[in-house]
Every structure is written in structure tokens, then in C-alpha cells.
Image (cartoon, rainbow, N blue to C red):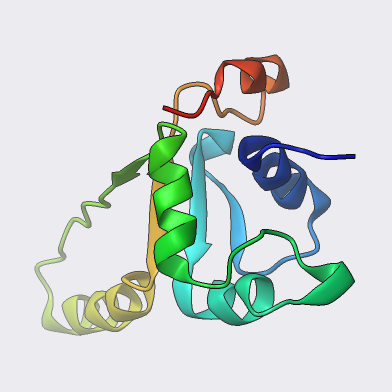
Length: 119
């Protein structure tokens, strides 16, 4: 069975087998831990290969070709130094997480997948 990129991505998210990629914002966004994703998904070869690419650049190009846009997280900062320092530590870990959005890629509406067309 040959699936197009958005269908493969959808199945991957729904499988729960990967710790490097998950649904974010109630199933409206895709969250990707870039470093773990490179190893866990793009590093696979042979029969367990998920995508026909091994580089993050190629994967992100596919997202863009299918209408996904990168979104940035705005973190509100605390006034207290202790909380601010804890948030900074969390943010540095958080910065390795990429968020992508496509209005036709929504966990609650799988029927929209057919509208995810390559540009």
C-alpha cells in the first residue's frame, strides 16, 4: 500500500510508536523533537524505513510542499528570578521542538487529509 506523505505522517502520529513526534494543541499541530526524530525516524533504513528520506531538511521541505507552516511558541515570562531560570531551562529543551500547522491536518477530522495536496 503506497501512502502519500500526509497519510504516512498521520499514521505515524496515530500509532503512538514514536517518542519524537506527537499531536500538539489538541490535535491541531504536529510537534517534532528534531534531534530525536533524526535518529528515531529518519535514521531507519530498509523495511522499517518510514519516509524515503534521511535528512531533516528533506522532511521539512515535504512539510512545506504539503502546506504545513512552522509556528512559533510564545512563552510568557515570570517575574521571579527562580521561576524565570526554571522557564529558561525548560525553554532551551523546548527550542528543539518544532511545531507545524496545516488547516487540513487535524486529528479530529481525518477526512480532511484528502485536501492535503502537494503544491
